[in-house]
Length: 76
Image (cartoon, rainbow, N blue to C red; front, side, top):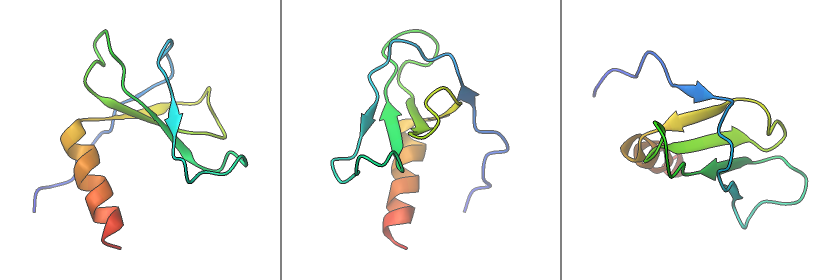
């Protein structure tokens, strides 16, 4: 198994992206939201943020890292 990354990049300046949340989410803002920046240096990455803190930082993941994370979480 490979070593975990030492740093997960985060951004607070992802303006103009379309944030999505799961259809399983309630209106209580207790979920995560995802977005795919289409342009700029973050294009191709997946941004993930806390719906309770939309102005807070969003973590940035490669598609491969996010797929591995969701697969591992699904196996719990």
